[in-house]
Amino acid sequence: MLDRRCPGNERDIRRTLQQPRDRHLHRRRIELNPLARIAELRKRRADIDADMTKIREGHLEPMEPIQVRERFLRMATTARELLFDFRALDQNFRSLDRGLREQIATWERGRACFSCRRACATTARRSASN
Image 1 (cartoon, rainbow, N blue to C red):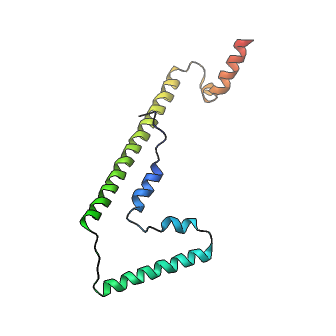
Image 2 (image 1 turned 180 degrees about the horizontal axis):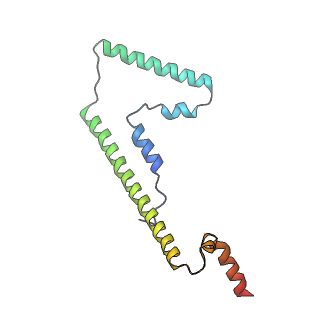
Image 3 (image 1 turned 120 degrees about the vertical axis):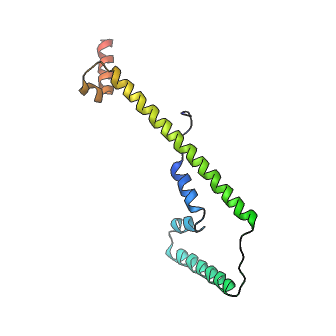
């Protein structure tokens, strides 16, 4: 599990949380032209108004059971991937912590030298080569 690339936790969290939300969230953040943003918001408002009118007229269009199931399965898959990423991240952290604790336990020089161990190692190599 340690050989795996750095887990994409933030990406997966955002994707999981945004799935049930507004599908235009990313487009709003990317668009820098104020006129284009306003035009997009007006279009969305018109779509929302049209949906509200349909509902008022009794034309409620619920999702098909298969659509509900597909969305649930997609979110469950994303949640499992996210859990795997967190477990990998935890394992990587524990491994790094264990390695650092082993270095500290086996360190033979002084404390100050441990905090600058790279500089000390370079100095020791130079001394050995002379």
